[in-house]
Length: 331
Ligand SMILES: C[S@@+](CC[C@H](N)C(=O)[O-])C[C@H]1O[C@@H](n2cnc3c(N)ncnc32)[C@H](O)[C@@H]1O
Image 1: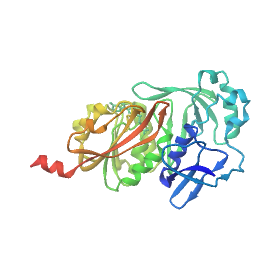
Image 2: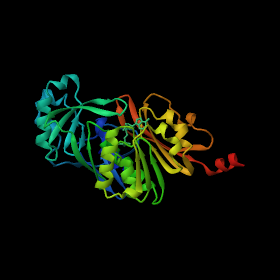
Image 3: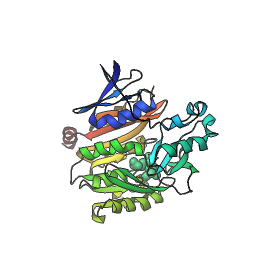
Image 4: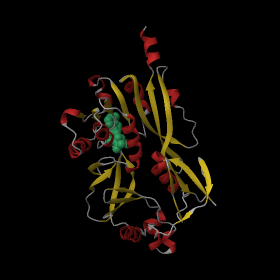
């Protein structure tokens, strides 16, 4: 009998990422699909609903590229990596760095959709851009990434993009309604804004990185969003607050530093509107979003989106403006 983690269908990919990163996923067994949920086979027990049942042994040839490496390199090569379009983005430990070519060649051989391999030296600076060095491939970091039926074309070395937010963008898309007014306050290349505009939302996207402006316009066009359905402001959000109206939904995806903007942006929310606030939280920190909200606002959902580092996680907080409190303060 094998222990499995039971997760609803809409959390399946996110749970898989988490299990891969925590090395809990048992890759000798296949996931079991049932109506409405999926069972991920486990090497060891993790938090969540655990179901014990007969596992299904995998007969597939493993896609684990590390099997192509010598045992010495395999043990230090990363199991997980991001893929943006046809570029694989690898984080390597200091001891793995000397084998970057061997690791990259193994990866290229096992994934035919990958054409280039870049070394990720971390997200840096005010524009939160990845510092990248190409290991294999020409020095051009522009690619087109497919996600939830959309295409995002951008230079990943000049504007922020995280393929790991695909499920989160789908969740927000599912929650939104056509006709809503949406503010994407830290838009990057506008993946949230494009996704929501495609649902019939009127979108205002803001980012102060000029490269965000360039690639955002490209992405609205690429995904057939009419110019009349979106605005893009290349500005610091705090400098254009007076020009903004009221919104049904505000995306605050500036996870390293969201809290200084919360008070001002929450005044831009309509009654019953929702803010999706992303924040990196230390795993041993007792972070309470309610400490930063006044009485008119309530957090209705908080959850881990994905692990961020061994000691921290990216979390999302859905915050609503309650109608009753707004009415009370207006009386
Ligand atoms: C983590 S990225 C999020 C990008 C995008 N929302 C996404 O999901 O791909 C944060 C973005 O906020 C922008 N940013 C940081 N501070 C800002 C500010 N004060 N005003 C406007 N944009 C800001 C950065 O340039 C960066 O593109």
